[in-house]
Image (cartoon, rainbow, N blue to C red; front, side, top):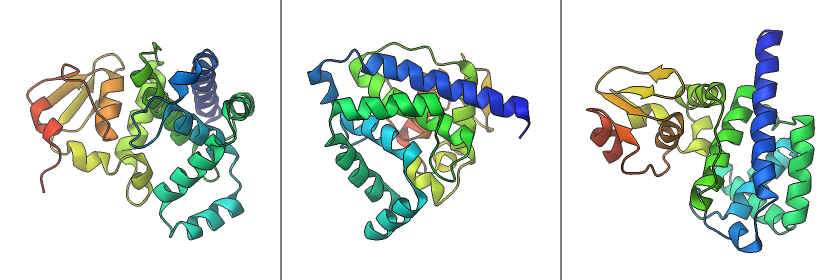
Length: 220
């Protein structure tokens, strides 16, 4: 990766983390308990996960993974609950530090850290009706990571994005991003990220001849 590419990813990561942090700091107590787009997680759980992951130490992650039966999603649920129990103030303090230092989870490429910031930002903002215009470059980066991530790494990002949209051409109308071949599915960059990660997409957010097909899910 060139120095310029790394600098761009750093900029995108910093911007997305700070933007979400500013909105979180204005939430009232009830908003933190609202269910997020992550099944079984509240807004507090998602933000607790965002706070923990960048500063998790490799040794602690390995021990936690072993204790979770080497199920990364189970590990994420446990750590999110543990960090949520620290309270909102502690979570926000760690998020401020993460935004300032650009810390990333051990072994995670910078582009994947951008994906996590963008996708979990959607997990929080959508249920709370919070507005945010994600940089199209961040949307493209996140989408590229999703379609390129293979098993077993994709178990933490909603499963196989490739299988979910195989045989279709995706077009992000606001992000200058396209992927695949076949019947076209058009939507915003955010809507396609939700589709790729297995999250709910609004009934009017996808269009094109392939939209109804991808909504039904991959063929068995």
